[in-house]
Image (tube, rainbow, N blue to C red; front, side, top):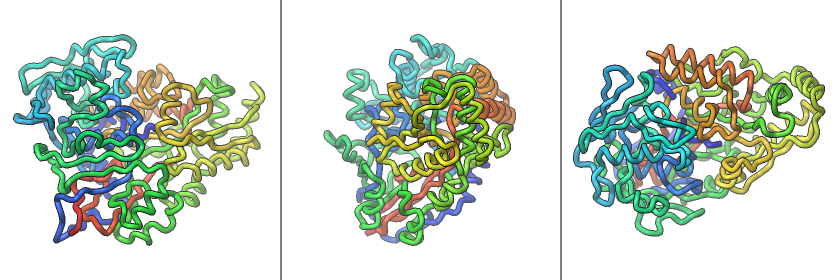
Length: 539
């Protein structure tokens, strides 16, 4: 799953935050230590980034966790998903189409270079250029001059002075400032352009942390970060650094947490779902998060194009017993999906027309499969690819068995050793099976769950789905005058998704994590990511 923090149009952040706070969270989030070390390093779990650490090309969790720690943008999102100015002194507009952005003075990168208007504008221009093939390119689509098909400068960006630049959008978009906390909008120092590939291996940022010298990134092993003393924003670190360990197996990470060799874990293995809350006590966390999970069936696969494909997708969806799987496999840490977004996001609906295709209905599933067989008889095995280092085997096996038992076909999982290898196969379009997918929101809005995954040509649209009617509704929603009007369009767009089923929605995830006895002040944010900068080590 290009599950990322990414891609959401909204102005009802308070509502989203309130929903997030109603979860059954337990844990050390509100605890504090009377004796804490602000110099000790915090250890946490992670995964090897797919690419060098260039913000505009980092769209997966492993790299995103690091990029968010070492860079600061115009805004960041607090625990509840509310935007807070970070480097921005102000973001203003009279018409929601033309924005003036002022940067706080005296901000620097860790090499001493100033963070100025050029730092943002040049980074955004690079990210938007088609020939640079950046995964976050589509985030710049609203800006005048953008082209998804050919190199075109963003004519809507203008540097006014050292600390001021303006942004002209193609249409009014009231939620544009909300998007600016996402990593695609981070600045880059002038030195990055000397050798961007080398920069990505040893990035120089401006956030609460920085790399701990040369060799800090040991590929496929860990990355070591120390605090940035020059960062002055709201995410000032209360510890001495982060040591992010790349685990090949979530079970090993959980064992390290229990053994006191890991401080913070943000993904409990499914084998421990029934025990981790009793194992960890008030250090366990189980709370709603903006995470949607699914699996993708590309049109290019045999038997999944055209009308036959629509019938087979619907049949497979209705052959999956989501209630049983979330109860038995996930021990109540997942909720069966009712749409393509997340219940913690403002505008969510559990009654979109067409959503009945997510209900378990074996008889209907068999009937639909038979209709598809009348077009072209089924042959072969239906497989779902997944990364073996992410704790997915149990649910993939359960889903495959549900499909197999209901439809009477061979169905199984197809494991890839690592997340990076799975993503590479998706990027290259060499994968010849269905594959697990999903989304961890970049910013708190419905648009972010829809555009990056299903819009024609979007960076995380690995199934190459394309429907002009869907694209048009997204565009209408994005340019709507207010949030309610926008969400109406996004819900209508989801009606089309329920007809086409480019992915099979499965469930929404809670963040299931915990911390060791060695740390305090552990909080998990609206998007499931721990607020590492607040964690303190007990003395």
